[in-house]
Image (tube, rainbow over the protein chains, first blue to last red):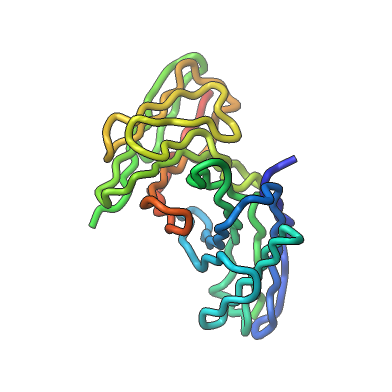
Length: 112
Length: 113
């Protein structure tokens, strides 16, 4: 069982819709959570980080964290074709919390 | 700003050959990482170094060795390459602290034939 799990998709949404991406993790002691976006053939880049239970909003992106359920999600409002990419969930784990573990990623396709 | 630099960008090896992937960062980061990425598998952690002088195994360390040469450089060595090690390898670095952003190199595409 992977320490960080995501549905690999693809998740297909029409332009303008809300895309919802989900992630679960195994280490109950984890404190920091990240969403990265990766375009095909490129390196991952950070979209958002979240540390506290609840919602965190940044423009069209909202990250949601529920530590009791060991669940973190990313909502993308008003999805655009340029949002089509793979979205990777990452969790800080382990003693010292420098072990950064990624999920398998969810491929998002936004159709015009 | 160079950020995280990986060399080489592409490499083809024969089964059994050895090679070292190089990674250097110029952001004075404490932590450095090596990941491999295969289709549908996301990023899998091979080894990481939380600080200069320390290294720890990740999810898939078998067949690899690492060296944290100094604060800037973290190398990944394949002693006897196997076709199963065909992958894209990413190096990353981040500052000390739980919530810090990881910055990635451009990746090395390795093919073992």
